[in-house]
Image (cartoon, rainbow, N blue to C red; front, side, top):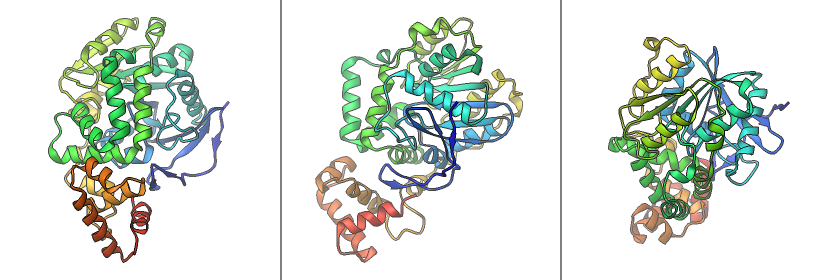
Length: 374
């Protein structure tokens, strides 16, 4: 059985100094040190999946926190960062095979002292959840699959998959904007800025690209027919990231699964009509749907600034953003291309930041930005 480390969360990751807004714990799976956290009380619900995960960054993101807070009024909500992502950094990148993910899930349940949970998985977490329910049927009370697919190769064609992974690896600034249009097309400008900042604060370009490659390689088609766990598949009608047809195919492949098609185009449950999604999911888990309430989305024009810089910073949000890229070793030309600025403008932002901070080098300014990031 896995054990939980006694150490608290004190790490440096994604070139940013982490906050301590979440009580992060660790479970050793035998191959990975897996970060997990919990909130709320009652029957346990494990949530996971989606492209990227970062326990503290997710918790600082308004729409996600409102969604989890709403669940936590009725359930004990367990979250984890899959191996190679977020704070689970005992390996360099997200593995693209199932076994490390299954071992991590089992280790977290052991560490939390849980025999059985409802598993709410999303997107790339869905094939993992299906495999887990087949391998450990006694540990999964119910399955809720959101924006689901079974075979990653069906999400996009080979050329499109390769191009998107390469774009994420080479230009996180551009690709995070592209991803926001895919995942959250109905966002207001302020919501879009906050979501872009959230993505970029959650992973390095290399980690994000590796996680995306794993998305495309998971395949649970052969296991789906063996699922015996009561399953609900929730899919938004106009989801651009994972087409509705893939959600339909998932429900058809799992014996007895119920498919519920929701209106909207947001891929993540906490975007768009988060309350409608959560009422359906929690009613399936035995909660009175009329009691489920999600606070309004908290993303606003200032949210992206808060993700990139502390409120007491003498720097502008753009200056702070430029310095974080300097800290990652980018040249002015590379930063200009990523942020759609001229090289002269990037140079001016660095010079202004150095003046405000009273430091003599760009390296010192970049170090200050890293040390003073949330």
